[in-house]
Every structure is written in C-alpha cells, then in structure tokens.
View 1 (cartoon, rainbow, N blue to C red):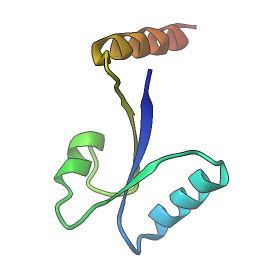
View 2 (cartoon, one colour):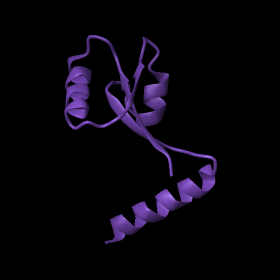
View 3 (cartoon, rainbow, N blue to C red):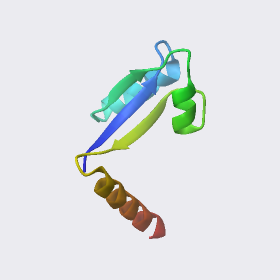
View 4 (cartoon, rainbow, N blue to C red):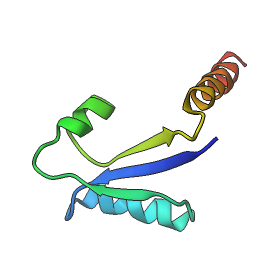
Length: 80
C-alpha cells in the first residue's frame, strides 16, 4: 500500500510553520501544498476553511484493494 502525507499550508502562517517544524523534527516525509485565497479544497478535505491540514492519501496500482485494506485495518483498530 502506498501512502503519502500532504500538508496544506499558507506562507507566513505561524500555525503552519509550527506543524511543519514538528513533522520535520519527527523525520516524516511529506509534500507541501501552498493554499492561496481559494480555500475550497481545504474546506472540502477537512470541513474547515483554515490551514494547516495534514491529509493521508492512499493509492497505488490497485487503489481499490489498498482502500479496502486501509478500511479493514482502521475498523479493526477502532473496534479493539
């Protein structure tokens, strides 16, 4: 299963900087996406109009299998 972390951020945002520093300190690989004045993507992904938000993207050649595996693992963790 292929996972990618994406941090949606805005230049000059102190909350974004703090989140980035913590992610970097932990040595986690992620990709940054700059958010401009149109926050519709952020709103759609998180339900909030503000940044930062960290999104885990799951995908590979067999995306449906990866999604099903992720859901099964997540449900098992929630039920235990």
